[in-house]
Length: 405
Length: 143
Image 1 (cartoon, rainbow over the protein chains, first blue to last red):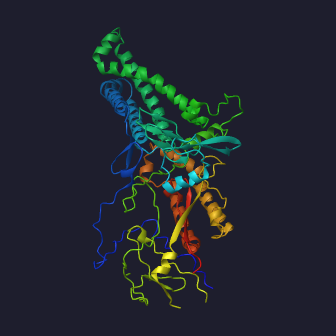
Image 2 (cartoon, chains in turn brown, yellow; image 1 turned 30 degrees about the vertical axis):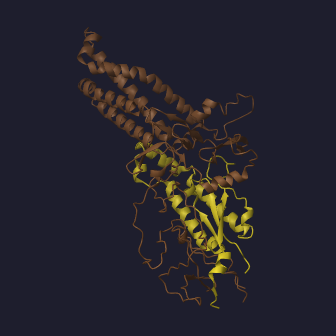
Image 3 (spheres, chains in turn brown, blue; image 1 turned 60 degrees about the horizontal axis):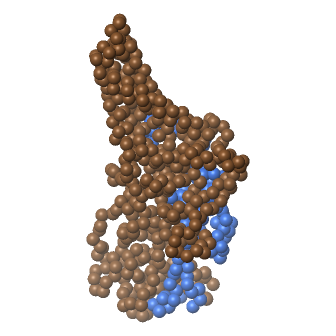
């Protein structure tokens, strides 16, 4: 007996259903619908983000003080190159603008990368996934109010870790993932939302952020040192500091900016160096997740217990891919769900007889309406009225009951 | 054996789908691994061994993608020295393995899962949260 119980489906046809025209009596069935401009997934992204360059660049909706950060860096560096460099090149060495230039470029590139890179946003669960999770959770309360917080416990390296359920994204958050309320997204390995760069800092852009603050602290310290040297050289010979400042007013501005920022930036770099070395996130450090302050014996389950390995795993690990697929195209059925490709099979409604002829020739069946297709497993000719939903029609069900031979 | 079926018969045999979700396994940390527990809905569809083999192969490939080896260190250091601009021009190691995974899933679908009325969805399309298996069911198995 041939086993023809299950349909032979064409895997290629399913993930990206191609639109086919709804069948109409008497109309030319090969005429396609007016092609709409295919939309990209970023256009229907549910989080609070803004996209530029057709989805290539992603920023948080509130850019925070990113313009201020950029402005301060550009102004300080600009003044440095204009006012201090000529003097120092003449009196000291021409390496100074070179070093300054390299640091400045480094800072700018890493800042822009931190701001414009997807920090590790997790796409929201599809409705089917959410329904499946709901089924698994024993929900005994009524649905008129938010049910109590749902948690799941997992054991990671002999350490109990609680996974929380995210009501916005409708999924259990993976470990170290947190939901950023400013961006309204769950971000993997969430560190913090940095207003200075106008973006969350998470798994994918943490290395850019770390390089940014380290190179910025070098740049700030370098400019501070150069400006001090410049003013000291000018003030030599009893001329005094005031005279030096009058001659080079830009240096005064730089001095003030650098003096007030170098301490905070150096402090931040030091703090993040500690976090990198112990494979912690700012979020975990602030909450004290692994500090054992509640008296329990807790250790960081993600730490490799070796500073060098920790640093390498945080900064030199393979770059993870962006999970939100900003530039991917939506399925052409105008579904508003991002990244979901729900597949439903045709249902046979008891409506008028509508048939569509397939391009390939198949023998007509005895009921005097054209056969649509036939089962490739057992050769049975099938008359199957397609659903009027264009998306569903992309899945041909070649159902044939098992034939007792 | 060219038998035909009328529309009325077909109406009884409407296919319905169900979806099974293989969740992530976090026991070894945040690495991308999927649970190898065999779901009960697939019991009469596919061999348990076959299923576990597929999931294990996927887990191995994801582990390879995220592996911290000398190659990834060199890539990381080189990237840092160039202010990470190499990521704009070069395909990362992870992306190369993801392509391999996509090919593997397609191959598994063609050879093993489609003939049994099942379809694996690439986890990357679900944000690496789940492996979605769509079950195409025949409502009436008897005529």
